[in-house]
Length: 319
Image (cartoon, rainbow, N blue to C red; front, side, top):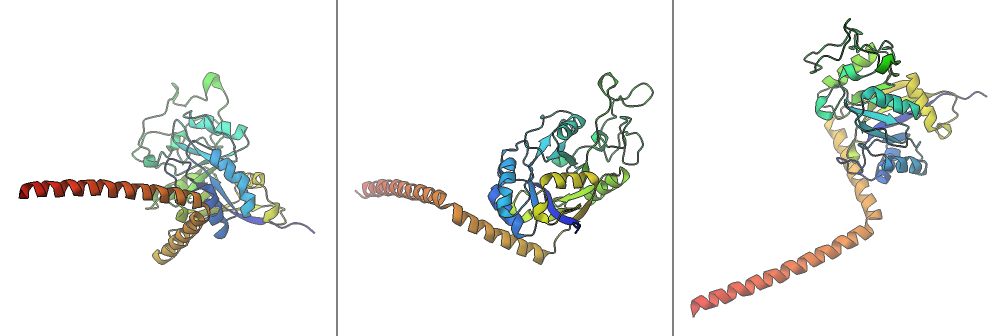
């Protein structure tokens, strides 16, 4: 009997407490992801991958597919490295980072593109598979030039107007594998629409991600990928998911939730966090209680001394 295709639901862009702007431990993120019906969640902390690797190792305990990753800061903006278990080079050109990710078996995904306030890359720095000549292109395939939308200066060009192919005429690097066309943190939707147009014009797969920094946002947007010839989710490995993204078998799922639904989501997340810390925070709570008792005793002692001093002063006035 032939196997059927399996749909995997993955949130490929989530931050843990290892990020400078993250808040949640990976155990809590994994528990929440499993409870809301995700099959995989990729921890993509900023420029550090230790917790992501640990999360990938723990994932099977929660019934999830373990996939490590990182959000690396390149010389031209942020880039998601999915499926790698070591840190890519830091602050090097975008195309070189894409090459490094490919050399290490990973998938390179452009997060929140064009949003400069969040270190999104400008379109002229995004290498695409169609850009075999090495010419910096816009989404419509024409040569890039500075515009109000891009907000940048012209890219380097040769005398005949074409951008160089690389050092010593080297072959231009391979392109990115996918574009994040729905980021749950983009409030107006304008940048998401712009990202969708760029992906369509360059024949690139689109993915959706929560870009969650707190628990209640995990899974607010996610990507569905089709895995061929798999009997069940249990038979799917991380390499299968990466290959499906490369092949473009992705479906974007995500929208701004109505207020009642969002409120319910927040309430569930808050309850789960309370339960988690109740289970794991006994030692931490005991230490906090000891510190609180010490602080209270110290404050009371200082207050008593100040009170005695004030009484003595008042008594001296009445003599």
